[in-house]
Image (spheres, rainbow, N blue to C red):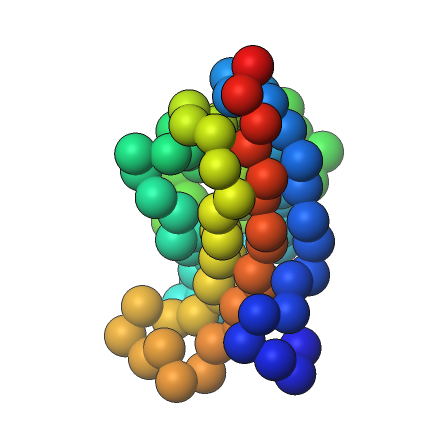
Length: 106
């Protein structure tokens, strides 16, 4: 992305609806996915799974994991949600994915 306001994705949903994004994560190398979203506007649930396994597991397991974010809208408006892939102790080496979320009244 070249501009501050460039979005990787734009999502339209109604209050009470949700969207889910899943990312590959290598926690054993220290790179974790995090989300930056207004908690007054969104309810966020995070879960982990290993490819091919149904049950969630502890993210410190050490193998490559899938991290899933389920984001549910609570309030109408247009908002930015940013997903960051970085080491918590070194955010100078990071990848960000910015999403525009348009929430309509239900």
